Length: 165
Length: 397
Image 1 (cartoon, rainbow over the protein chains, first blue to last red):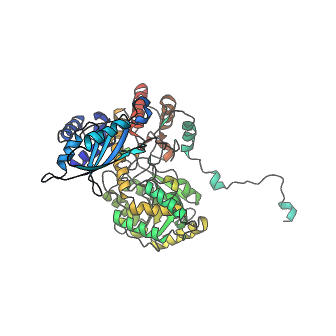
Image 2: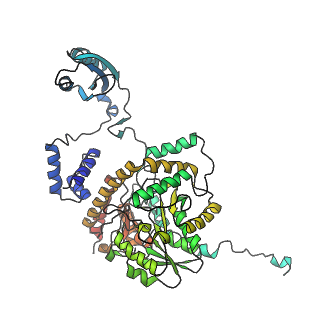
Image 3: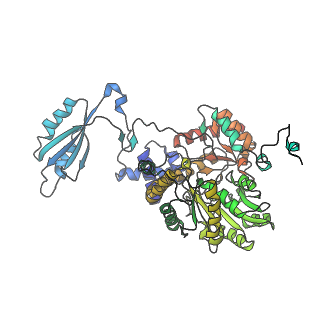
């Protein structure tokens, strides 16, 4: 498969990971076998890391989750910079995302939990106690409007006429 | 004659003969039928399934907030005309003078009307490559001229050939209407294929009205603007707009690029009939040209993938379909069912609740085919083609 087609395949999957191989093959004008091989290669090379669903948990009342974005200032370490402390933080299962930032703080940690208490405990007991961590500022997320390019509570319907020239 | 003899008790005719003789669009009947159906999947829509990019909508709102609510110059805002000529030069290597050779119109449809009215006299003949967009022939008729369809068909992948064109030319022929990438067939003509048409135009001294509204949506080869061909700049009226590439159909904004004498004649009609295109839409269009490239590419990529899927799925369903090189339509043959295109479309709608448009409404050469727009979600396409496959296997010869 050409690199153009490979990029097209990645784009389609990034948008919708559930498109069946048979459909992908038709969209790319390739054989199913070639598509499978290409996807395997992308997975092996960790270009494609995972196929997940974007969930609006606010509609699943029993399972309401709480999320916080925590700005963390850390002391970078000789030779490894921020990577070592990042590696320690990302291992906590509560951490759903972790980014190195420019600006007034260093790491942005996204933590998800069932209760506000749980998140607070994580910050005070686990995150703040790491040697390299200098300070933390915790912001609780109040509402999700858009995530990974997907708008929650989308109300833009197809307003086109059924048949037009 | 005395004054009183002009009085009459019977009513005079109210409608012009020209208008009375024009058939209403065949699409209308289908629209009426499909609109009554619930849960109908429509492949009958002739417009993008994207909403206009946000930056364009936002620029339009900003223009209103800033109070840009007056007329613009007749030909359109000077900065928009400049942006149009820059865009045409960069994308299609054709250069026009924004002062004298460009008019911003109310949709590409107005531009077609202007082109015909500015150059054609009653009795003249205008050749129209068909199947084609439903407006061309009636607009020619409305101007008192005679439309002469030149049929294309599946044997040439719906491309116009020199031979067919020459066979239709008479001494009254004045112009040819071309529309590639084509609605409804999706056909695209290469530079070389267009050059053959250019030779004919030159040999018989014909004008070319080239409707290139789908120019951005050419998936396999770069689009060739007709006026980019050698010696064609002076005999081409290039018509385009924002509807398809920028997903701006409802904005009603098109433009035309033509040699100064023709453009200025068109402007005369435009200034009396329309004054100018809507100011808000022009502000949106300016933003689309300045910062819309990325959105166009994203949409084009999305159409290309759906085009590929559609052609495979239709052929698998038993409906023979050539590869459409552009626009967002596939134009399969319904021969496998033994039905004509009208019956097929009607039965498909009733039995499977899938709306397609019968090819014959787009003129000669469309018979036996249906137009399927793939500007709809992949999910809908999958369901629609599964239903069509069931329909064909039930009715197959």
